[in-house]
Image (cartoon, rainbow, N blue to C red; front, side, top):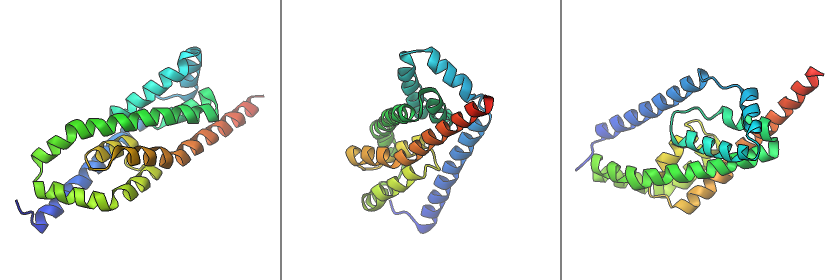
Length: 196
């Protein structure tokens, strides 16, 4: 089946609108979610040794099930565990999320994509992904404007191999995660100093 230029433009517009709608929905849910960092930190600390495990499972699951807001979780982890451990636990949760979303999309999403889209279009997406995929993935992970879960699912729909995908996913999210952990820790110290 031959795809006309007009059909390709329509498809691109539909994809952009769908991604925009997902981002807007994620922002709305995050804006109106009942997150309270101090309450979350107390709750995690009250769990004792189970706290890190519960946090990792909660954060990974919340990223797999979009659009549960995940933005506040690393901040709360840094407040609860400290900057270094909050960073480490968030990376572990991110690894689990990235792996689950990738393989869910690869095993179930890719066959559906092949069934619903013209083969020529899927082949063209695969061709472009083979050329630009890892570079685009790195930029999208470094600046996660679309949300890490959406990026993970999208990568699973492409022919990108898992090992380069997971390495890029972890390495490129480190600066953002580290910055979140360190600024949260600094804010906690300032709040503590202000209470004295």
